[in-house]
Every structure is written in C-alpha cells, then in structure tokens.
Image (cartoon, rainbow, N blue to C red):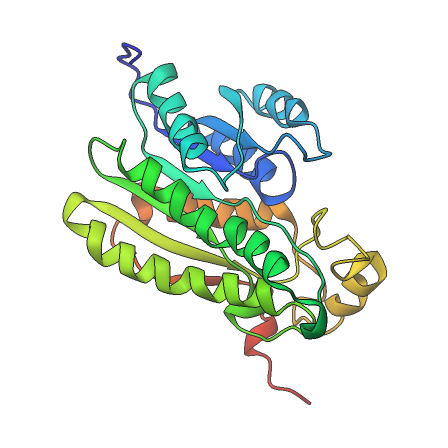
Length: 258
C-alpha cells in the first residue's frame, strides 16, 4: 500500500471512458478528488481522452482496465486506489450495456450477459470497494428511468437490471450504515451519451431530440449535469442521505400526461 499524507478523497469510477463516467471524472478533478478510471478493453472510446480532460481540469487519475463481470478484476480495480494513494473513499458503479431484444429473442444468454454487467457488476464493484474502505465512505450506483421508473419495450432485461439496482442499494445502505458507508442510486432520465445516441439499441440522435420535447425543461440532459449530482451525493454535504433513489430527468417523470 502506498504511503500518503494527502487527505484528498479517492474515488473509483466504472464506465469512465465516456458519457456520465467521463464527465464525473472531470467533475471530481475540479473538486480535488483523485480517481481510478475503470474502462472496459472492448469499449471503442479512448480512456486516455478522459485522463487528459482530468489533467486539464487540474486533477489526478490513473486508468485501470476492468470487466465488471469478473470479481477478481473488481478486486484489482478497487485495490488500485490503495496501491496508488493508500485510501478509498468513493465508488461509483456506472458501467453498463444496453441491448435491444424483444421477448421472443431474449434467450438466457442475452439475459444473463446484460445482468452480469448492469446489476451483478454493481454488486461486485461495491463489494470490492467496501472491503477496502477503512473509514466512512460512499457508494453510488447509476440506474435509469427505464426500469427504475418506466417500462421499455424490447428492453426487459435492461429494465430488470436497473430496477434491481434499487433493491441492492437499499439493502446495502442498511447493512453498511454502521460502518459509516452511505449507498445511493442516481436515476438519470434522457441524457446525451454515446449509449442513448445509439440508434440500434436506444433512441438515436433524432429519437433523443424528440424525447426532449416532452421534458418540462425542454431538452435531454448533459452528462455533466448528472455528474455534478453524483459528486454531491458522494460529498460531505450529503452526509445524512443514504438508501435513496435520486431522479435527475428535467422533470420528465413528474409531468402529468396530456
């Protein structure tokens, strides 16, 4: 373990090569939080772009290849924080995949593969991180209004995983509270990310623009807007907040249908 007298917090972030994870790394850099950026080797997005953005924001980070389907890899990922800086304070489980599949095509392998990442991957990330937190800490899982609030046709496996995150977080919030570890869920609405811009498995650019018309604030969200809420949830300012689902959707889910 690295010897360090630096009291700046240390966070690990899965899914940090793009979208909300990348924006969060930059948000943390501006707040003085050091980060380990977990990136899947098969991700087409270059994690070094995130690392450069962190450096440009005055932050410090390291990049760690990670497949959240492996408990051994999530252990190595969390341990990297201790090896680099001697502490681990925050873990954000943002890694996820999205695959369109109608019920007739939703075979066991397709179901299992998505849940291994989007639900069990959260468990592995949190289990590895909590085991390495010496004092109070905080965990945040990224869910979605798809499954977390609404149903979504041809995405039953995704909806089940994102809804399952709620139960996981609530239970861990109770279990880990005596250790001073807070656990919450961030529930994004429509956000402009590479995942939502995928026209095959998600809405695509035109669908996302149309969806924005039904949002009270009149547009889809930006990754930075979600990241800043996660940063708040993992900050001392949220010290009495645990076991909650925080919806950040521009007012979409509270608008009365017309």
